[in-house]
Image (cartoon, rainbow, N blue to C red; front, side, top):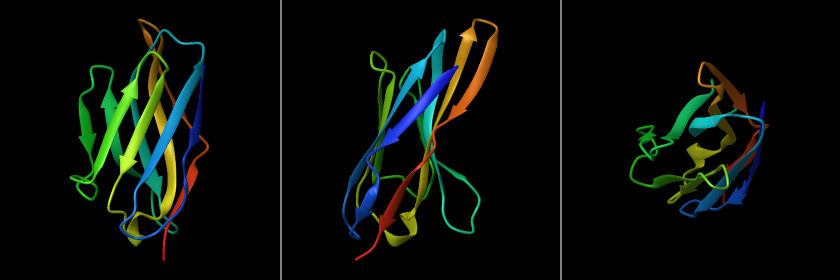
Length: 120
């Protein structure tokens, strides 16, 4: 099983930047896709960005152009860099991993979430 630990959330002023990190640990064959989702108060969880093991990235329209996602496969860590933050980016950010226990079994894991608040 995979455990995910996020870090890097906090209070940021509008227009500011932040970097979230998520480290995966545990027993697995390979980690396929890692990504970030977020959930604002009263809203459903939504995709922010994902990145495959081959570094193919996918972004929500709302964050395109001001967000990068990267991963260090050696450290089993994914990073989310967000710039020009807006109050509507305020949410709990969750790390997600799609991983394989072996060549035939795939599983998913979620982190506990880290709160990002964008406010002056």
